[in-house]
Length: 276
Image (cartoon, rainbow, N blue to C red):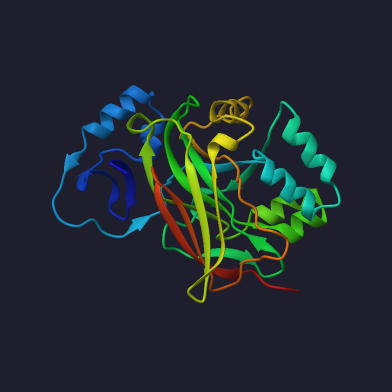
């Protein structure tokens, strides 16, 4: 990550080859601007010495949305868990993608923070994804890593339960930073996922965004067709890694998501909510 934007407790900062600069703008400010003006603002950041303080999730006023069934493995995984497999065949092949609301910004957790699995779910998995950081015009300002934690048992019981399977406290992790779109190629991105349990690898897989059935531009276009985002938005682009039916994450597991261009996002798993 030669250039990356970080959300520190003191504000937003830019790291360029290990040197830090303070931004005079928030992420919402930058995403309200055209890409060229946002880039100029990032490049005008003021250098500072010393070590930056603790970081926060790389989001401030942006909603997080997500796309589903964008990889063949995702389609197959949904068919394995559900009695309604034809629904997922249809959305994989159709012109209109599955796009759903994932998280309010204040519910997002960052690198090093715990992610959650629902206490009332018995089958839960991480979903490692590339996140598009889109400006108010729908242009790709940057990229980040995302973890769209998901209850397979709840969604598998009935597709209409998808909001409960996807939207709950600590269900969305982003980070560790935002890499501006002008500082790297638009992909494809290689993504790795590893789940550690008691210090050993319990699950591991890799994929590439080259395997996506849809491209980033198409997904962004659909999101913006009837929605406006004056402060920008983050769109998770789907997962190509779905563990087999005999695997579920457990409290105490550690989830690592890696991408050579975007770094590594690490979170420990905790249970959230109650069983009634």
